[in-house]
Length: 358
Ligand code: FES
Ligand SMILES: [Fe+2]
Image 1: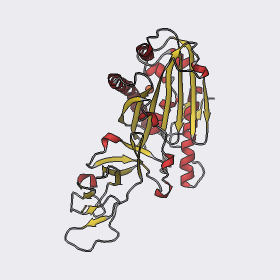
Image 2: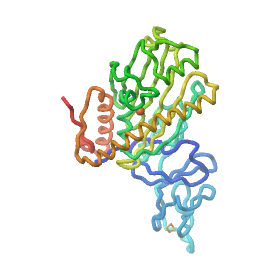
Image 3: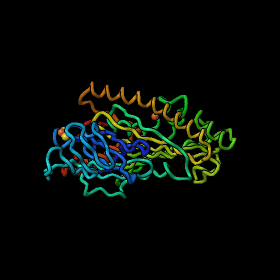
Image 4: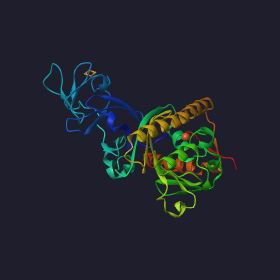
């Protein structure tokens, strides 16, 4: 059974990565080649020549057409062959698959499943990434693990206490109660930590933005949207200033945007950004935050790859679930539902089965 649904939009590149040149990426086990056309839109084709399967990414781009680097077949951006060397008639079956593509919120999205179902309205909302009311930037990292391990990691932030102790972690995250809810395609985990000492990262942000030093109310609202996007509303405000009741005007607010694309069952492309609603004009802060978050995510990367290695060494092992895994259990359930709906059958056992400690 697959570990991911195919009928979904997956980020396959940051906008700046796709230029007027050939870029190879793997999404859901599909080898893709993408490039920017003369009109600025993006084309995505199967990365395998119809003739003898040489990856088209090893060929050349001329205008909107790709010339295979082996025997020179030429394909247009719909994947149709438009020229064959040494013959005038073009075999009508000569084409490679082209994929539905969209560009939104600074990501290039591809739909690897049934093209007839590709509806642009289903692209996850990540508007903080290009909304003028927010400032920020992000990166893409390739992580050698099942994409669901990254999602697990983001659905349960108690790990901050143990993995990110020098920046955003603090005992309160592991101790504060949280509420987990879900809808048909979403799962949300909300945690408020009221009247606490801010961890180093947030103490620095609120001091920089407003000069405030003192106890804070801290929040983390983690929202998963199936199959692979998690936007986390995070921040701190002066303790007692009304943030938990809805008035965050004296606080600092950030969004950690994450969308994770499976390459295979054991590797993924992790696209992220950190957007903030304070000190919008400070380009230096944008740079510092992006690099700071990158080093925090570097700590996760080590954990996730070590975890995947251990999973590979324990085939058939079922995970135990704790209270802190409530959000991740819903996340996995919603993904499994999408996979089952696609395969037309009932939900079959998961590749990484879950079991309860209770
Ligand atoms: S393999 Fe591409 S033209 Fe022959
Ligand atoms: Fe983390």
